[in-house]
Length: 324
Image (cartoon, rainbow, N blue to C red; front, side, top):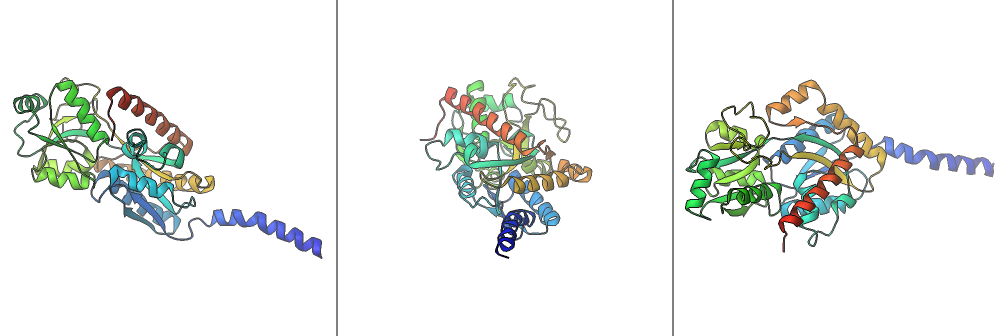
């Protein structure tokens, strides 16, 4: 009898972990967003959270954890229990650049302390200006900036973010001086400031900008992709205007704490891939300027993030850009 009870206990111990994994998620899941509502990261996070709520039967609740160019949300995710109940929707700034530019300030190492689940979308970017900015092209922008160095402001989502670094690259190539104004709340905070004329220029993504461009509250000066954007056929690319290779068409992706069990990561990946790869979902997101680019696997996404982290590190060291 004792032997049978012991065997039964061993069997139960072996079954319980599997049962616990099968039950995920058994309670609401937090999805942290590093920026304020209204930007591209927030937009895709809310779309994915709604899809996961529908497919997995538990609430996936978006929380906007703004500040420190995404580092607050990064650290909160990395330090959370690795059980799949705290996730992050980040991007190339938070998960590839910050590790390099905030190396001394960060209490974590994103490539070590977070695990990627999948890339979600890629978003074309443009050089955008406030409606009252005097220039209507890159050549006119350069002429105005050279005439009055430092007079015009450009927005970013934080020091060291790719909108900041892209403008730094452009200023060096063009030989001009603009004044940097970072916004802790991301594009959702910076865009109203641009509409109001507080800042005049930015490298920002089309998902956040297109409605404002169509309404005339903002104007596009250049597209970043190698080809013109179909929604803005009259806006020439930055390469057409003499500056090839400058600008980032950024990705958004989902992450979890590094020690999150593989079955949980795999289930999240499968659910996101199933939802976003449907034709109607791709078409709906494309209308919002979000191109679905789900990774082939979590492993492939992690390899991409590691590669880009290394590449941005090389650029920042070469340009001697750092945060004191």
